[in-house]
Amino acid sequence: MLTAIVLYDRFTALDAVGPYETLSRLPGAETVFVAERTGPVRNETGDLALTADRALADVPAPDLVVVPGGPGQWAQMENETLLAWLRAADATSTWTTSVCTGSLLLAAAGLLRGRRATSHWLALDFLGHHGAEPARERVVVDGKYVTAAGVSSGIDMGLALVGRIAGDEHAQAVQLFTEYDPQPPYDAGSPDKAPAHLVAEFHTNSRFKLN
Image (cartoon, rainbow, N blue to C red; front, side):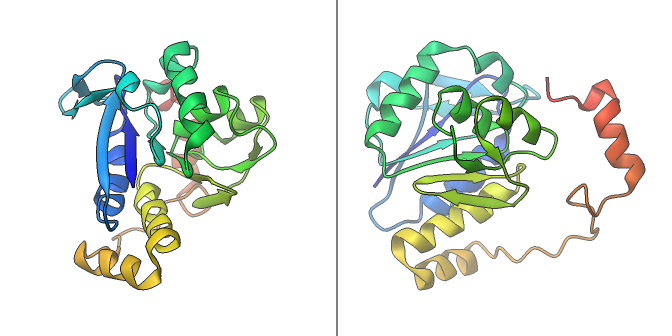
C-alpha cells in the first residue's frame, strides 16, 4: 500500500508525523512525503523541516492520501496545482484522509461535499462553507474519507485505519509498539473541557487565529 503524506509550507509537524508513525507500520507499507517540489518543507514555526522525496506529479495514484493541517493551509486553499492533484489522487485512492485543517483542503478540492467531516475545533465552521457536514468528533469516517480533529488526533486516525486495513490485532500491536497510552496531566484537550477563558482567548486573540 502506497501512502502519500502531503507537505506544504507552514504545515503542522505532528499532523504529518503522527499518521506516519502508525500507517508506515502497515504490512507491505510504502510511505512517502510529497510536495509540489522535492526537498525540505518547513513547518509552521520554520524551525523543523521534513523532506519531500517525491513531487506531487511523481505520485499520481497513491492508495492512501494524508493531508495535514497547519497555518500554511490557508495559502493552499486556492493552489490549483495541489487541489487538482488531490482530486486526481482521490479518483483512484482507497482512502483519502486528513488531520486538523487538512480537511479544509479536501473540502476546497470538492471532495467532502455532502459528507460528514471534522477538523480543528476552531475551523469546524469553515467546513460547512465548502459543502461538508461538520462533526465535532475526534475521528470521522464517511465512506473512504477519514478526517481527524486537531493535531494529536492524527495518531488516533492512523490507528483506526490500521485496524480497518490490517485488522484489530495488528493495530493493537502498533499501539503497543509505539506505547501510545496517553495519560495527559491536564484534562483541557477540547473546548468542552478546557477553562472557558482559554477557549474565549483562542476565539478572540489574534495570536491564535488560524490564518
